[in-house]
Image (cartoon, rainbow, N blue to C red; front, side, top):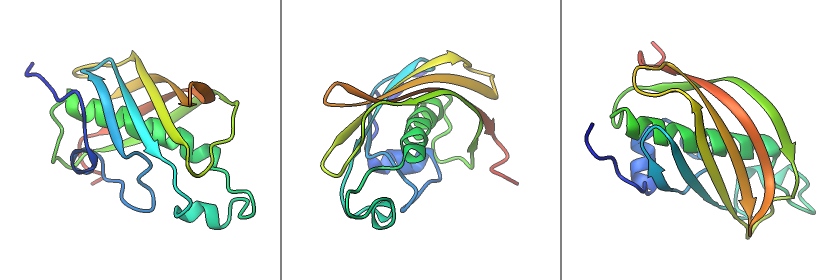
Amino acid sequence: MTDIPTTADIDLIKRCIPHRYPFLFIDRVEDIVANESAVGIKMVTVNEPHFQGHFPAAPIMPGVTIVEAMAQTSAVMVALSLDLVDKEVLVYFMGIDGVKFRRKVVPGDVLRMDITTLRGGPGSKVWKFSGKATVDGQVACQAEFSAMIDLSGGA
């Protein structure tokens, strides 16, 4: 296997996953270890569209978007690990287990998502991950989730 990048900026992220504004919830991926782990970074800003309707007087990032950001982080790691950059690939949630929310995520926060592969690897279509999202070292969300890779590009 060729070496994969250990970081992904927004341009590489967009070559790995099909998500775009307003549904792209990661800004950078760091510490990528092929098939094993990655760290997603999300700079939370008040300009995001969900804050207009999700408690506008006291904006809080919706929990489902935090889980989605963890999933997007794992999808970038998988795409880089399996040499799927610039290919028509979709990844679908199959299950989300043990989700716990521990801290509000608000504009100005830097959300860090640590993702670890529990099951999956080269040749696998189904992967399972453990994810933990933190802000300033405090746990905001944790979950296990599984996803399926669709190499047909949704066709």
